Length: 112
Length: 115
Image 1 (cartoon, helix red, strand yellow):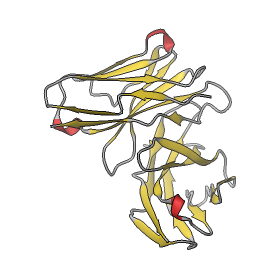
Image 2: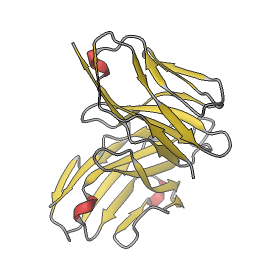
Image 3: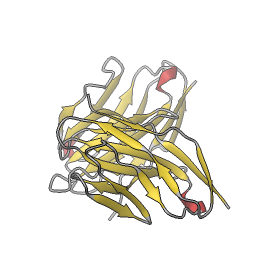
Image 4: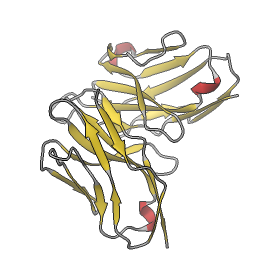
């Protein structure tokens, strides 16, 4: 069945460090891929998305490229800030309006 | 626009008691989801509604969990009787039926503690 595997945390970085959170997926067909972020005490928010191979999603300095050949959707940011501290979830959806499959989440803490 | 509303935000009950959660989706969103998020895990879909019909409830423990979406707007998720392993955050999400219907908007969640 469809699934998402993301790197385990927690991840602790100093401010302005480079961030990579790995995400790989298993799915039939051509899923859409997402990164959601969950700040402390809040619900999940869509961070970025990519709906077809080679698409690059970007938002708030974060980027992820849909790599079909490696079935990956790694999240990157060139310079993290303390305000980026949150839990990041990789997710996929096979069809519009269909069920989402979430990874287990990666906790990121950025220290000044 | 107003986001997805959920209540209560927190609930503590004893095992074998019953509890209900309420969700009001974003206006105009036809699809509504209930997720269970256990600490340290990703959200797991419990049930998905399209308007007032159930699309997917394959992972809903139907012996104790029930959900309804009367009139295709707000929804209630009930647990009766609760077990210790039901302690989790229950998230409600909604999406628009259309080109971007894969984008889900989440509420703040209800944190349930069963003692």
